[in-house]
Length: 220
Image (cartoon, rainbow, N blue to C red):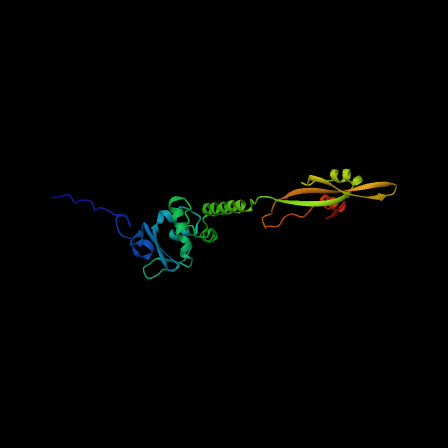
């Protein structure tokens, strides 16, 4: 009498093509999952989708309180843009954000927030902030001003120069006039300042001390 051989058990989804019903094989959950995102079908593993436990995709493939319609092949229907889903799925696969050069990071961020993938959200926001910082690093502009003043005003004018204003040149214009009992010579005082552009492209206004400096002479 021959001893009966034990039956071999194959786990659902192992060594078999993806089953219907979103990857759910008869008798249990399969390894493979189909997702129909905006009309484009993506095929991935349950392990990949469950990599971020708090994400929408993890909860979907684990059957947690999320009711999703399915198409005729059994794939989960998700009404989102498939263009940005590829980078999200790849991030879940290998943990890196890889984008085509023409793909907008804002679009991927919008989808990452919808699917609630925290690490990916932080990576994209850091990238965008770094780009914004690089764009705002504009070389400073030099502004020059010429002030006309009397000889007795020179000391006071130079002492009030602050807020980045720097003395460049003093020119005696050769004219003089009688002020009381003394002859007063007139000068042109050239000053300069570096202006750094703000993120919105507008330079900061002159400070109170700068306005005081302008008030002490007449612009030519």
